[in-house]
Length: 277
Image 1 (cartoon, rainbow, N blue to C red):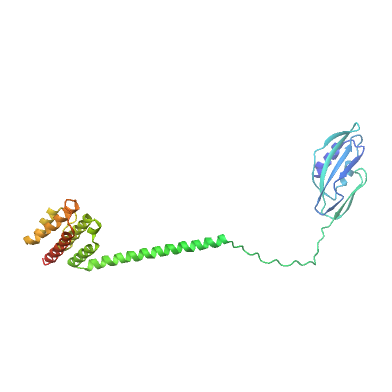
Image 2 (tube, helix red, strand yellow; image 1 turned 135 degrees about the vertical axis):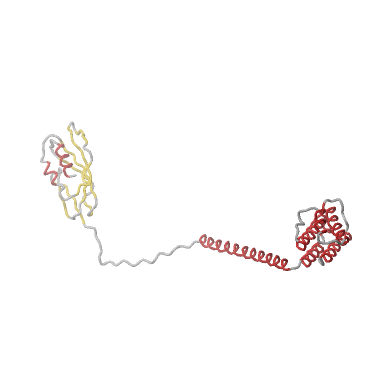
């Protein structure tokens, strides 16, 4: 930086006089001040003497030289930004009229004891509060739903376990009683009633005689049943029960309440009689 400034002063060349404008005549240590220098080009001053004016300063930057004309005379104009890290009064004898800059120390009060600031408190908004409450509520709802589901599952398993422990006759009689209490005929659901009745009897045959009865037609069921029973009355009763269910299921017959109740009694009688086999 110093070499560049020295070259700048040499290029100023013939200087009759040097005039300057100082932006501040009083600064604090470390503050910057701008000096604007205007030099004529008629004589050759000693550039070293001009440069010595800034020995106590740090040159921050300087502008590119600009040529101007004042009263038919040519001048060179450039600017410097300087600062000082030491206090004192600095004069510039070779910058036209005598100029000076006073650099002062930054005042500090070492005896002044600052009070200890309180710890910053973390702000807690109402939005944050409701977020946590919402999370807790969601978790509580999930817990309640899960608990109810588990209880329902345990209850179903318990019922299944109880059904498994029952004998086929007991299980079937219970199912027929439940079907009777549903009174589906009063809801115009006769088709559904006979569908359930057919499934109950078919399931009983599977449990009692160990053959698939839910997916085969009535004729095949009768053939299978004859392998276990030669009683014509029992065979005819089973045929009448399953045939009545098929007629009602396909809407070919719409029995009344008395016929439906009689059909349920026939189902129970068949189960009781066939259980002796």
